[in-house]
Image (cartoon, rainbow, N blue to C red; front, side, top):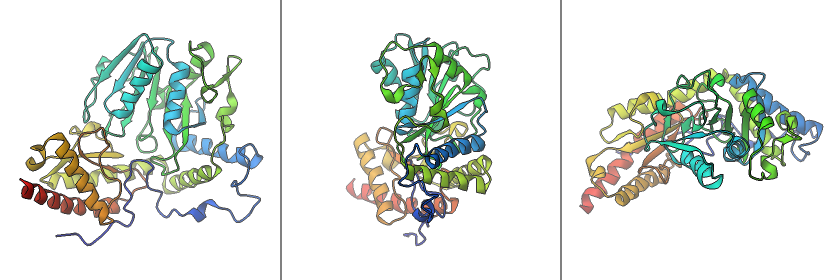
Length: 392
């Protein structure tokens, strides 16, 4: 039977992600022209103050140490991570971990673009985590904390030694604000506003430990750096970047939007509340999968299963017997049926991942909306399965 109840907010995209509950554009516009940042220069007093507030609220909510620098940089998480790679890698050998498309992209950057001479690639297929015991922390290490396209995260930071001599460069874009990041294990971290905060795209966050600052000030890469990647002047860190003086012009509308999200995060209880909301979303889907006769998790090991980018596989024999192209078509049809009913948007699996579904479970998504979505998945699969049987 077709369900009758729809999610109140049927937005389950893995980026840009759903806005915080109760969001509206009116929240971003002050009626006092002397207080609004819209239409003002990012270099004005009010513009700089807003950018500094973004940094300060990030530090407070995430518990980032006082001696770590936090900067707002261009081009979302991608720009922030490439900024770190282009300026810091090459000083020593690099271990590159990849278990999904974004990690594989950093491998491509290091091996084919930067052409680093001493690299080791440690890989795992979608749904699994590489053998972390293979990592050599006398080398620099690049990895994603949470694989957005595979739904696989590292379980914690215990595998990273305190006495490492290399640096850890962490892509944390779908982990920050939804997972507990141990800052003493991280030298560089990046993310974007568009994920767990539900902010707008195009702006990245870059966090540097004192060891990362030391690397920037003591090492000059062999390749030329574009202006957007330069973080030093005269061999010293450009501190302005980490006080809200952005390298290029930011969107002040996006700044107002992320400040709204950060204030909401503080109002509901900060990081612990954000994590709890995301974990509740995963728990709702886990309960449903336990009862399902056709759906499973791409990440079978619960200890590495993401609570933000929740990736589902289709386990029914009528699906697994299909060719890869047929599986992709069936999974796409399932997602289209759900979307056509207005029950869930953008739930198709990532294009490079095994055919299946991907449901965003970050903190801006309400568990009641997740619970309302799930019966629609059952209905849509029944319809797709009936078509498969008819075609057979």
